[in-house]
Image (tube, rainbow, N blue to C red):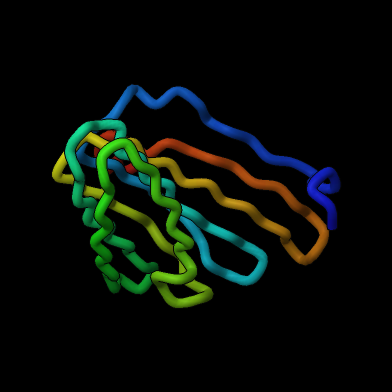
Length: 126
């Protein structure tokens, strides 16, 4: 399937700048889904980001990422957590960073698309 064959998608723009904590309510590594996390350090000092991947069964997988000054890192979530996982994410950083979560899907090889969101400033119940 060529890129032009995708049937849908959306993008949420407008992060309010860097901060030390970012939260993402949902994600998925099931068949047909690609979840990524993009971390950017706009500052002049290296940042250490602790990424806590919270799985649907309550297990938490923690991975530390080092971001040199003025750098960007893209993480394939499927390479960090088990395949076929539902996953939320909390990122806490030593410096202000910007974090977004792109997700692409090909559901039953029929419906295709993707979306990209900026993380929330705090966990929410809805």
